[in-house]
Length: 107
Image (cartoon, rainbow, N blue to C red):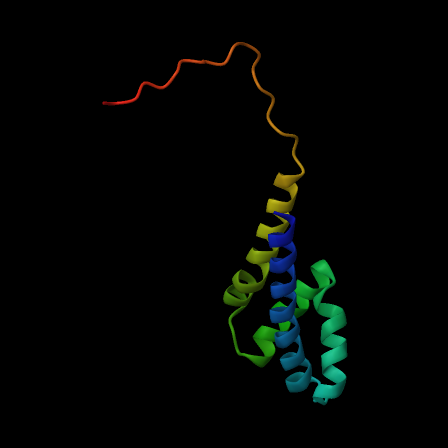
């Protein structure tokens, strides 16, 4: 479970990095050699990366705010929710005997 969440976090960060690079190149007229390290740093800051990706998608890709918000906010929220569900304690068994009826083979 942790490996799947780590892979999802990396994938979302790469997508956010690409859109932030696009936004920096389009809006700020930065060369890619400058935009790439800045985008790499910003993309993996949890809330700032998501917000920067949303703003960059609106500015560089002409997305609507709603579409950009859905594309970049929902996966981040889902990963956080799944991560918190994994931290919940395991359900406790209700005491009592477990049924030990042998399975009968169908002949």
